[in-house]
Image (cartoon, rainbow, N blue to C red; front, side, top):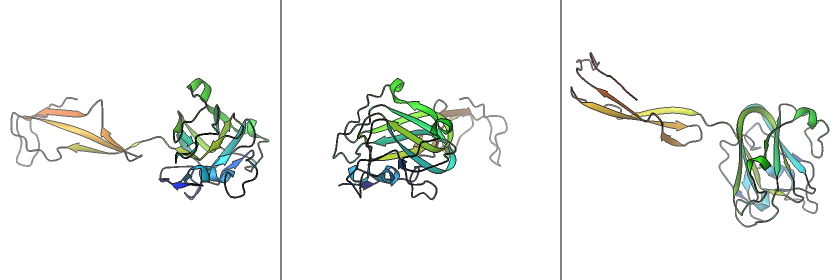
Length: 231
């Protein structure tokens, strides 16, 4: 069965990041000793060969992130390698907690007092069906959490990897041109570009351009009378 590694560098649920623990679940499909077990839910591999399959309707899978962190989105799929297109999850609910008195397979004895629902796929408009290698993303208001619980409606639901992410933040700003040569009386436009914690780079809209009129420039390179900026 196929299983492919992926970039886990920003995945808070990956059990190999030094914090998160292997996933646990209410149950799993019998008859498979090396695949479809709960711990494959956050092992860092996409694909049917590294997935969890439930053995009941309204089953659940949990992940201990190993520390309390701020999160705002969770993703999962059925088979991101595209080889299987069955065993859809149906509707699902995501709940979070900062403590779980018994983090173990089959145990949800105190969940009603510990876990708070933060995302329901029904009002979000999810069809309950994952098409091929599609990734489902649940985005919500940032919340502090250590434990993640996903409950899935369908019997025999298959999840190939659960990923948990922190909110994307701005890490640096670059302004170009960096060292403009501006003559007296000229204007210069500047563009600000931001680099974000997820590695993306984009113009900082709605304020991407700064401009200013230079009326005098001192020998030391300081504006004596100008730099009327607008943005």
